[in-house]
Length: 276
Image (cartoon, rainbow, N blue to C red; front, side, top):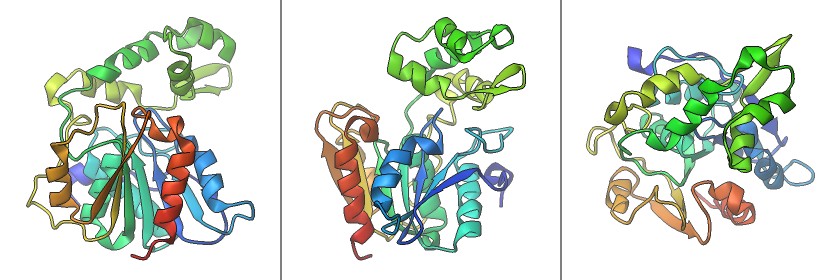
């Protein structure tokens, strides 16, 4: 394993369900595994016997270890070792945005671990920079953690005007004794954002032909109101994932599973019961 693909060690996970196919969920930037809880519970069913879902906190997020430098190969390696320790698999792997890129790298580098792949609103390409996240990072850095007495004060002093985004970002705020800290590695993400077009997080690490295409079935879910997936991305996606099938969810933004959970749940149910 290269230094770029250094494994952080075990990642924090939550389990939903007691029987059925193994399904791993990988969240996006500033997310946590528990963001997928309601969908995982729906897939597991009332008795918890339709799917065994593992909600993963990626490195630098939630309760998982932090890294000193970001790499998708490193993230994928950490996910691989974490899943191997739970069950040698193979797994159905679902990833959104940052987690979607991580899931794609995982399938391409550890294909025996991945039975089926679901990629939610992200493509295997570079996106230029982290400009769309720079404002959120600045807001998080500007919150005076040492002056906060309670979460209500944090909410009042956090600058983000969109209540949904504010709640999403503030889920990263954790109290430890009398002090507060960010669970997400904001300093690392800020340094990457400051690289502009050199952002590693916004980039894609693999060239077509540098790895064997992944031979398993792939569901590629896009939001119709999102700009993350474009028509021209299909060629590259098929080069890496020849068995890809795309579904576009009408009216959904980049956060497809939040905007249209029932549609995503039904799509995932079909993936779970489908033959390989």
